[in-house]
Image 1 (cartoon, one colour):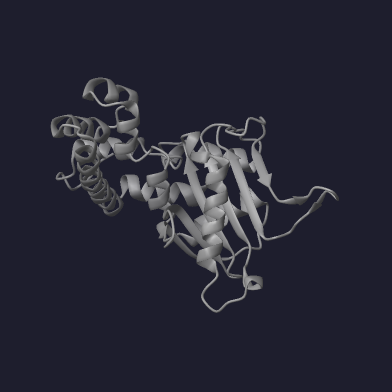
Image 2 (image 1 turned 45 degrees about the vertical axis):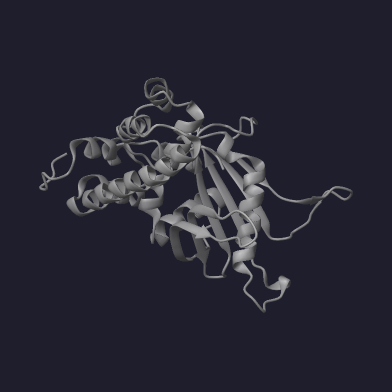
Length: 277
């Protein structure tokens, strides 16, 4: 890969080269304002081709005045004002069932504006794409719906939770092909041209690479600010924090970072932003 701007840090370029769509930060970048990409995901995951996405935003923060805010990886809205939250979860703990429940409730509270009736609520979908088979059923897709237990009928309240088993990359199915693409580092190996072109832009085009380098720099600065605050609160020495930042930025395994920085694995995960809230 050649780039005209030699000012890009070589470590950043190598990190960008290794990024995949299964990495939540990279997926958020690739799908931001990318309506066609969100439509492709919904077509394959939901088995529908009648949805028209009108808005896609990544890293959207939903405020909760009485509790915990959440930052969504991707929030999409379709022409019927139905909401879709895509979350990449490489950590099993991050895909906890109660997290899905909380995300769903926050989508509802965000959807229902002041003065609207509860009956105005549209459909909401929380879709977790997980690196492992976190629900343990050895199937590629889990669709969770409320049911009336005594009659075995669907409750049909408009809430939908879906877990996509990212470890199932069976290319004989559309979903397996999609998961295959999510694990590709090189766009040339991807099956879906729409996604391949998007990935190629951020990995090989000078404009896209420049955007990614700026994003990585901003992430490092934010992580350092957050880490210093956390460290000061917990009495962690600044030298250890800086050592950990350097190794995390270089993409080292977090267990290795913990071993050589003198921090606990939990502290390292929190500094890296992977510790579930």
